[in-house]
Length: 445
Image (cartoon, rainbow, N blue to C red; front, top):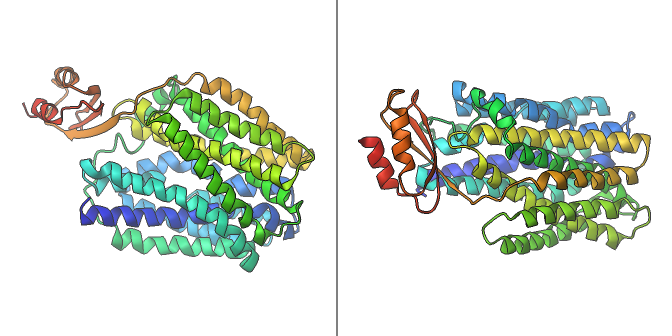
């Protein structure tokens, strides 16, 4: 990477870390800290934990499309401003209902697609994967950091302090976006952002819908866990500020488990390991659903949960990328993200409702039972080879699209071709044998 690309990658990764850390810090503390509100109930806690997911799910695709019309930076800055507003509303809330309004506003700042598109705009094709990888690592890092820092900040400054710091972090992101991230040439975004005319086809894709439902259940389960787990830890006389002493070793052990599973995968995503991840998470919830358990029992269950969660969270996007047709990855990932955030909302509602009416153990039990349906869905996912996506430009029109597509499919390593004659964009799915020189020769002929 050159200096410009490195600057862009680090700045956008910082934006992701600051924003996502603020969003995640609430999860391990809200169920306990919210007990101080006069209208506290498990159902409202569930809505507060997962509420951001509803607006994220609804606005993820529209805001991605909006960045094509308005530009990347204006949409990102708008999203950060809305997110900060929601954070300050929640920080000043004197009731659970107002806090939920703040959380829903936080979710309305749905800028993930626009950030990824901006990263694409400011990087060369040969370095794009590295830039996106740095941002991806930052997202994972922000979650681990937030889970550890959240309880410590809540203990010192309360829930209002967590939300206030979240709002401040969002504001600090704005100068990074405005002045540090370089301005790039806005590229054709079929493989980066959602396209309206592709939505219907991809919603009903026989393989993609399985991954969309899978990520929905995955995030339903993690939200369900964080509505319940902080309260479970209180049963062991652990104050909120000491919860990090559980989360830190648990996350460390689960990372070791993730490394072992990745090593067994050998660069692929075998179905057996997807099934293993689901089984680990289901087993963890089953263990937590038992009424009598010790601190060690709970800790072991949570390690199993995060080992499975980490593996699936890391590999589902790669599967979507491999399966999505050439030139349609942006739409496929937009749908995937929408299902992901809706799952977070669903987990909060289900967990809160069940605990409010019945019991915490039943909420855990529902999480375990949902993995049975999930296994049925996962077993239908076909194993695919990892592919690379390449975008090129060519001079062609609707009259010769078919002949160029046919010639490109004869180029070694080309698996799929999509041509967009409106902006002269060529989208390719290729394997390791791809001959870029021959592909450019076809387009320049």
